Image (tube, rainbow, N blue to C red; front, top):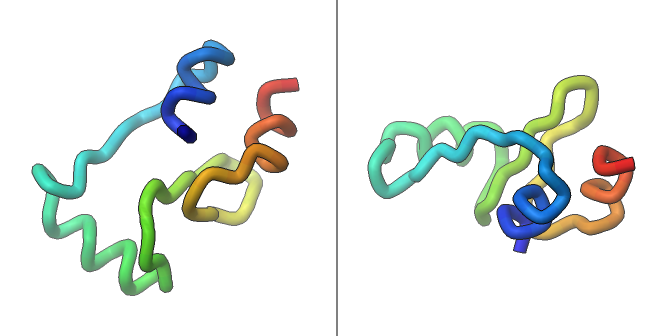
Length: 60
């Protein structure tokens, strides 16, 4: 849902596939994340999952 939201809003993003980049899973776990997607927006705290409240802020 997060990816689809970003695409429909025309917001550019970088996707990191954790199945292809398994070492990135360790980084996410070290940061305390237990679910995907993990979203990192400059100037904002990282979050995981679908957060329409936060995503709407960046699409405005």
